[in-house]
Amino acid sequence: MRDLLDIEQALLGQILACPNLIDKLVIVPELFDNSDLRAIFTTIEVIRAKCLHVDLVSVGDELSRQGRSDLVVVAANLEVIGSTANAPFYAEQLRERLRRNGITCALREGLDALRDENKSAAELWDNITASGTSAVCLAFEPSIPTISNVLLDYLIDLKNRVKQNRRGLSDSISLGIFELDALLGPIRGGELVVVAGRPACGKTALVLQTAIHVAVDLKKPTAFFSLEMRREEVLDRLLAFEGVAQVGQIRGGYLLDEQLSDAMSRTETLSQAPLSIYDGSTNIELLRSRIRREKAVGGLSLVVVDYLGLLDMGSGGKTPRWERVGEITRVLKLLAIELNVTILLAVQLNREGDGIIPTLGMLRDSGSIEQDADRVLLLHPCENKDSNVDRQITAILAKNRHGRTGKVELRFCGHHIRFYGGETA
Image (cartoon, rainbow, N blue to C red; front, side):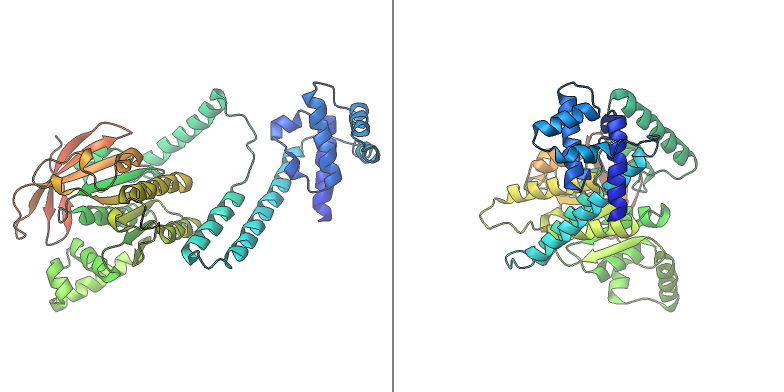
């Protein structure tokens, strides 16, 4: 493009006049698409590396030494320079081209990879989106992250957080149960939060309740991935949570006219919430692709995965289960950081957790769960297993990278798949 060639020439001319722009704007050779201009820029870098003064004479001498005397005239024509005020704009224009070229390469590589029949469509799409995301994010930092620069940016961010919080617009999320939220504190993007327990102790209920709270009450985009229930079953539980009827009545279709009317009214309200519900596939690559798509299309604050034991890395059968689980939790943690989202992951405890107070060592299949998670919440039911009576569940915050640990007593209503608060311990 002629316009971008003009910008390359203008930027390089300003660099000749003020070489410190290289450091200030973090200019690199890749920004110059024209080979002659890139050679001149590289020559300027060589002169600076020798601690020599950069001017037309030194640049001409170095070019001649390299056998590129033909570029001396080109460099001389660049020296007519006014103010360097436009240099940041020029540099950003060239970076934008670099980003676009990166996206083009990612798409071409994706087309080539389609010929490989050994790779699944989900894996191919994840590679394409990952490469494309890296290309879009391609930008060279304009400043060195010294403590003074970092603190300045941090204070600006902190002030914004305080303002948002005072206006009720905090970017953190909560679980929607006062006593539990008081123990956990605000949960922010980049965190992997694990909710663990034995079967039938309320793991799914708690993570689904959290998804509803974040999407409906906080109005933050949420994605719920159900690996053990169909979408219809999730919606049955959702209506029971909303108090339309007991979950058994909803599942069996035993609703009175007024209950059916209430269900229609509640679903109309829920349809306005930024909540996506996925079911079916247990492939981690497809899960990752869907999360990236959700983040790119409409933004995303919370991802709920129910549950870890059903996720599949697609590894060979010889890979130990604990190693595959460790890879999955590592992928989810890195994805949370990359996309700045919170990932809430349901995990099952080992059988040895039956009837006793659970510990982190009882997390099933892999110790890396404890290592990768920012917070681990263990659910411990009391002895009463009568489904007709609300159960007492102790929620134990066994790991918390961002605050204290402790426990709270919760009440679980099985008919309506809902937790209620108790007392902090």
